[in-house]
Length: 256
Image 1 (cartoon, helix red, strand yellow):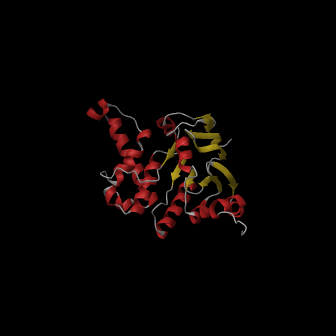
Image 2 (cartoon, helix red, strand yellow):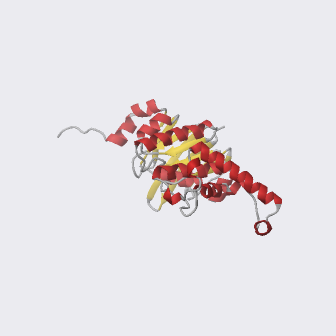
Image 3 (cartoon, rainbow, N blue to C red):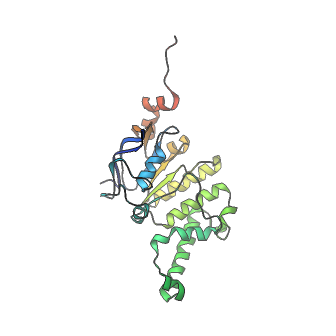
């Protein structure tokens, strides 16, 4: 059974059809990519899967259960975590504090616990600090632990977003344009990091415009154009697919 199953998902905004009967399955442990030209409907699809918007029709199954239309918090609570195209860190907090915020769904507390700090609260905080240190070491940000997020170079801010998402213990991680704004070296580091995350058994779906990155790391790719899925397959199959070539390069027309 797939970990994620998108079934004939359509999203309309008045007369605009952003997603038109899109279907695909993502098996547990897969590194899956969704590509397409600007305006193809990729981010709308991510928003629908993650609960930011409700599909007009169709269904989305996560681990065999429908999540279509559920609140984002409920979906995240099931282990489906996403990042965004624009960096959304708490820039006035340190790197460590940003990661600890990401772990909120894995911790418990109350007003009374915050005021009186019983032993279990202190133990939970120490465990959270240890786990945060492990995550920062994993993404290569240990030396930046006490730096304010706003002072990080942009490439490291992207890595911090991944670290914060990992703190939520995702089963499925949605990465929306993770390489946007990165230079070649930063993109290579990000590609390595995504593969490391996937190597931990976390299923990854990414939207990405950097075709070099996608073709390097994705095990399977779906292509969307004008809201519809036009192809799905391996990198080699996608490279050779005539509809994909037409969507990105246009079709030749005969001379008049």
